[in-house]
Image (tube, rainbow over all chains, first blue to last red; front, side, top):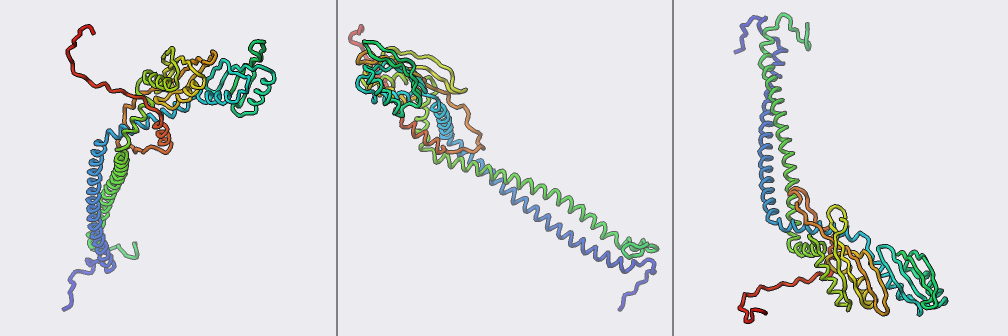
Amino acid sequence: MGKINLLPKELTPKESFLKLASSLKKIVLIGFVTLIILTVALIGGFIVLSNQLNSAVESQKELKAKINAQKSTEQRLVLVKDRLGKIEHVLGTETATDEVESLEKLIAILPDGATLGETNMSPLSTSTKVFVDSSKTLVQFLAILLGSDIYSKVNLKSLTFSYISGYGLQLALIN
Amino acid sequence: MEILGISIQGSVKPNIRILAVPVILAVVLAILTLLIGQRGISQIASKLKDLQEAKKAETGLEARTNVLQRLEGVVLSQADVSRIALPEKDPSLLMLGQVKSILEKHNLEIKGIRTRRAAKLGKEIAVGQVSFNVSGELENVLEFLKEIKTFAPISTLEGVSIIIEGSQVSVNTTLFIFWSGFPTEIPAITTPINELSTEEKALLEKVTRLTKPEFNNLNPTEPSNRQDPFN
């Protein structure tokens, strides 16, 4: 049996509106379904992330407890690093140890007839007096000293002569 | 008047009625989508950010624990070596003990000893000056002066004055000695901790080779009755 529409034509919506309403209903239905899926996905994601966060926080707590138990090791490591930093600073300062080693080399090259006199050493420089018994020894000593690479700079401050001690050289030496 | 090719003149009411429900539902859907989307995504983003930070902190803490576990066995001796080389307090007495032992080794005689404070090195390193007079053979004196740098606590040779008296020499020596207070704070638990660098290890190796002072332990003895009260 066919459908009978008793409504007057003016009260019946147009076919195009009926189609539009039907399409809109379908779109809204799909939209709601999508929204529900999206909401479930968001809630699920939120729960998963919350669980992961909680487990990370728990793990952090355990690690912090472990670190606290190793506090003495950490304190010692901090102490070692602190000491080493400061030791490096100290060892970077000037010292006269190199001057001592250079003086030892100077003594080793002194020719016969040359003797060392009063010597003062400070970081980076040495002031020394050398006595030589003859002009020949004086020339020999200066030739050896200047030919060696013990000192980068040799300054002859004074040269004296006496019949008793011979020639006296006051030298300023720089490594 | 036509909208989208549909005439609404004369038939507004039934057409609107038929469209009203889906339009209202569409509006509700749009509002819900907007609210849930905005709030949900911001919550997820916030959780993700928290999780990333927590994971980063966890990785840092894990690395810190691993470093500490690796160092547990060795750091005690390293700490001892380094604090003997650069003590917390004025090491004048330790230094004099060291100087005396080396002088004895080289058959040298010590005469006057003087210690005093010097200007600080930087902000944290205190400096002391130890001066002493030594006499003996020149060769031995030079050996002694060279050996100073090989013993702990660390020192630097500030000045040497050699006076030659016949076969003997008299040497006035000035050393700088150093000390510094221990660190009072350890880095925050979240900051990364590093093992010793290659340079630090090399320096530690050098410091380990320094001759350490000898510490004598005096064992306690029980009180006893003196037979002679005046002795």
